[in-house]
Image (cartoon, rainbow, N blue to C red; front, side, top):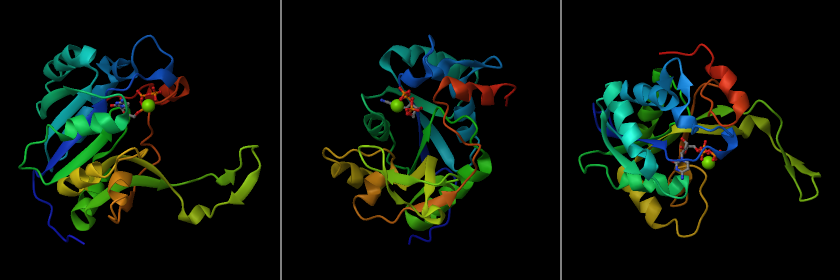
Length: 231
Ligand code: CTP
Ligand code: MG
């Protein structure tokens, strides 16, 4: 346990927008889809920027989109974005590229998917608070469906206890030194979220219960949730 008081501005955020959005099947990459006159990425950026603990934001995007992102940040006046860096082949590599840009003065790193525009300030503050207490925390929600483990032929092997299962979201907040140490130990491991990188080196990760509304815009059906959405 860390039992540290939350300091203003000791969190540096990495907002991810370097994916290709292949499951969205749209002409325009999902981070640039227009929602009420603003690109989708705008909503995640202003939500994260509104946290008083976040001192600055590193935005990760594809090399070819850096100029477009610079224009978005400038036009919408998102002043906490301090740098825009190219992403990597995988989400994990994109996070690492962002991590390398973080100034030494920051104690915590917050990672957020640019494709989660509905994130709310209370949940951001709660997960930051838990990371200050435990060293690493992620937002998540209790699963609503029954989950069965299946074999390669599609037959149920086991019905898992739903009371013990959470579906993991972002933001995830991790003490920077632990995160860097976690990355040193990743080797060829496949990590589908950021906190599993520190779980792998023995860190106890707190799951901060958030909101079902914090969905990741992934497939065309998800766009319906954005109708009428504005901030
Ligand atoms: N992401 C990233 N770098 C990658 C892959 C993903 O920064 N190499 C980001 C995406 O931009 C997104 C977040 O990670 O904000 C979550 O990824 P996902 O929803 O899977 O987005 P995409 O990878 O873009 O979509 P898809 O998997 O359908 O191609
Ligand atoms: Mg992806």
